[in-house]
Length: 247
Image (cartoon, rainbow, N blue to C red; front, side, top):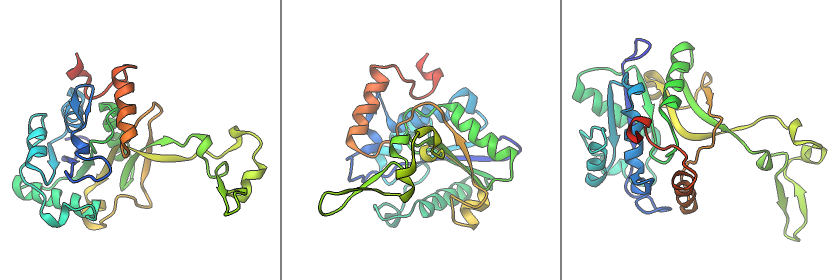
């Protein structure tokens, strides 16, 4: 419990990824992505989490979760196991099942996806603290968009290979420092008030706040990003999982 709220952490890990087969079991720095998520949620600085579960359709993934500090009290039903299943519906199912089994109502839901291996316990603490200290319906961890990919710098190419700025304002940009800062979701953590998820059936609301993570994170969607994550973890020494597990 933190900020007087009972907290449930959910690690969503469907087995049927098409882009990267067995994506959530990919190995980075000697541990699976599921294991790394479990390590962080079981770090001493996250001991305020009341329950940590993995939501999966796979007995193998469930076993990997249990081996790394995540409870697996149920498997997803088939209708929530396809690549068309909605994230909100899947999370609502996890909360409903956990509350039914535990006989409690959780006040705050953490979503911790396995695909962000460089997430650290301080990212989760910061998101929950921001939610606890404000009137936000949810908190999302974000990173800065590199100015090379800013909408005012992005180009489009027509059928004759002629280049145009995607944004009309792009041609007037003289210095990248003048560009408005933009951000993207980095997948480290989502912290939601129960009503936001269960009643509004949303993750983003008009009161959603951002926790900015300034260091580099990788959110794995493509095969090349697995290679990149392994390089930074194993060659460059970027921290993965919990500091206590690495000591």
